Structures are given as C-alpha cells and as structure tokens.
Image (cartoon, rainbow, N blue to C red; front, side):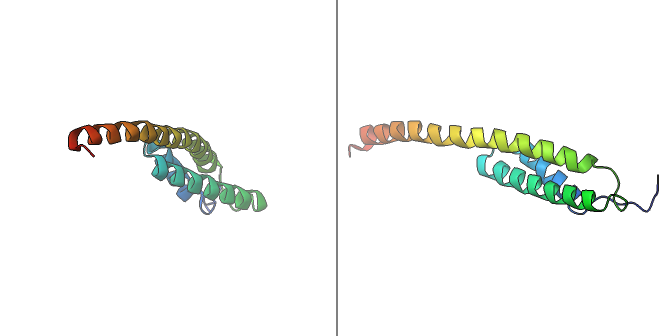
Length: 104
C-alpha cells in the first residue's frame, strides 16, 4: 500500500458528524442535524474518491459515516415525532393541572 495516499476530503468530518448524530439521536434536533450533515459530507467525500481513486485510500470512514448518519436520521426522526406527540399529550395535561391549581 502506498503511504502517500490520504483519506478523501471531508470523510473524517462526515464520519465524526455521523457518529455524533447516531450517539445523540435521543436529542431530537441535534442528532437529526448532525446526522444530515454527516451523510452529506460523506456523500461529497464518496464523489471525490470516485473521481480520483488513485489519490485516496479506502472508503472505510465514508461508508461508516453514511451508515451511521442514515441510522441517526431515522432514529432522530422517530424521536422528534415522539417528542412532539408527547409534548401535545403532556401539554394538554399540564394545562389541566395548571387550571386545577391556579383556578384559571
């Protein structure tokens, strides 16, 4: 293997964003944004690696970042929907409790 080969540009950044998006998918918007950014960066890195295959080594970070980003997008989307539904359900309940306590 030639030591002069480097990782594709944006591949490590895409991997890190995809990984953080996956880890933080319980924080609905943060995980969703990081996952989308990671997937986009990995897509850009994949395009660069396909155009110049002799300049860049393996696609490990690119593939891992895309997979983690896609999983993060799915999980974060589900968590965002669940958070909105929970807020609607609890919001009504909280208003009822507020009315009972303060008599408005």
